Amino acid sequence: MIKGTIASAVGAVVFAATSFGVHAEDIKLYAFSSGALTLGKGILQNLAPLDPPIQVPVGFYVIKHPKGNVLFDTGNNDKIITDPSYWGGAFDALKPVNTPDVAIDVQLKKIGLTPDDIKYVVPSHLHLDHGGNVGKFPKSTIVVQKSEIQNAFWPEQGTGGPYIVGDVMPLRAPGSNYPNAQDMIQLKGDKDLFGDGTIIIKRWVAHTPGSQMATVKLKNTGLIVLTGDNVYFRENVEKSLPPNLVLAYSPTGFFTAYEWIRQLMATQKADYFTAHDPDAFKAMKKAPEYYD
Image (cartoon, rainbow, N blue to C red; front, side, top):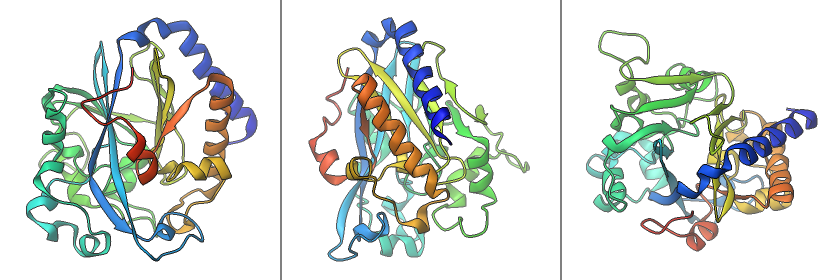
């Protein structure tokens, strides 16, 4: 993605926010965590130390919107709470917190919701710690990049490690070879989710072949970028630090994402929320508190 494209993307967000922002006063953004992982920082960030290990959150977000509730990311699959072997060797490697209180339905209850109350599920990508519970929302519409759902089922060489096919199998109807068990929007680009400019899904190939971010326009807080794993830590954006290249499907995609976020910060006083930055997550409001 070249600078001209970044400028166009910024312009589109500015236009949408100014054209339809009257609806922002009705929107609330909630932050949750599906437990935590323990790993060396260098697993996520290039040339960072592997020791001592750090504990990182597994963040996900809910947007309450007048036209329907939106879940951005779904955390670790709740199956590991009762069956750690579901993750295989990844369980011992990542040491996830798997106490019953981190289950996604328990988390949603904090704001009075159940999985059936979610209109759209928007996974930033389908790795085990972001798309783990994607199959727990049979009444929702899944909004995913077509290239990501393809890679979850049939990963490109060298990209398959962080996917667990059991996470996405519930999306496939019995006897079918296609993810058609429920409503799904398979994107090949961006989408204004409600057509009012308040939640815009941004295709941004960086971490995976179909990674995506989202912008959320709030009345008081302003524009928030939900980054998924296209930004691991806030310092990645602040210092242009590269991720661990093993986890970078498109290394240049990370740097253009950083630049795009910085432009939004400079032009709209935007902010960005990551999934795995322990310091940033500690400072955030947690559900049932919210951003509006």
